[in-house]
Image 1 (cartoon, rainbow, N blue to C red):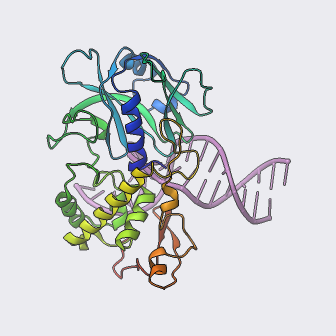
Image 2: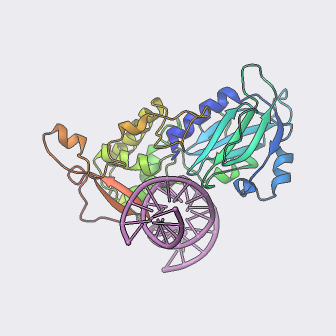
Length: 315
DNA sequence: CCTTTTTCCTGCGCGC
DNA sequence: TGCGCGCAGGAAAAAG
């Protein structure tokens, strides 16, 4: 399940293989994956054919490729191809000779480069992800839109509401803290709300909460400044380690642009560890067992000793 | 307006 | 062997 570290691994691969190249053909075997492109398949193709990918930029789990009709021009790009991997999306850089994947949805061919494969394929089993072309608009704060690329202060219109992620150099902790204080909800809900802080999904939310020794139902309005610092520091730390490990893969659904899995799954402390002992308690000579609770229609894992339920829990 | 729930989607593993 | 069911969950839409 791609969250920030997995998407960043993909971004780096795309930057290496795709940036600077021109789109020479566009095939859409399954239009459902471009349903967020409201004007349809032909418009999608027309917007991409002949354009050059200037950069690969990421904010949270959103990726985008600023496009230019004339790469020799210094003009600021005004459109971008946006990609979101959803639950099971993959962006694969491959040779055109590779057999078509079972869930192949979109196929882009690029200008030839001797050391690089010709195609970028979007493969998606569950179709929660997708691609679309949209306009780039100025960021609300005038700072670079996200991580990677040339640092232009632009963002796709459909991603303008997405908050900065904890690995963004322009991430504003004080602003997030004030939003926590103003909101009447539980901490994990807030961590998963991409408009407040982006890039965190179910796995890294549980890992960050475990690392910070906090409960998912902690009311955000009771958070004090050091509490906000602690949970964000934990999220940043766990996602950085995951990025260094190439991301978290439980199965073949998350892979990098070359189809390889990441190795962070073996480093998880809470997520997926129901019935197993808490590593931190173990270190202290205690025995407590990680439990699983259903919350927000998904599983939450926590140590009942390190992360006790607060009396004022906000579910 | 703000917060919470539902919906979209497919494949896999499980119990009967 | 097959079938129904629950589960996986990002984010937009709908509901409260």
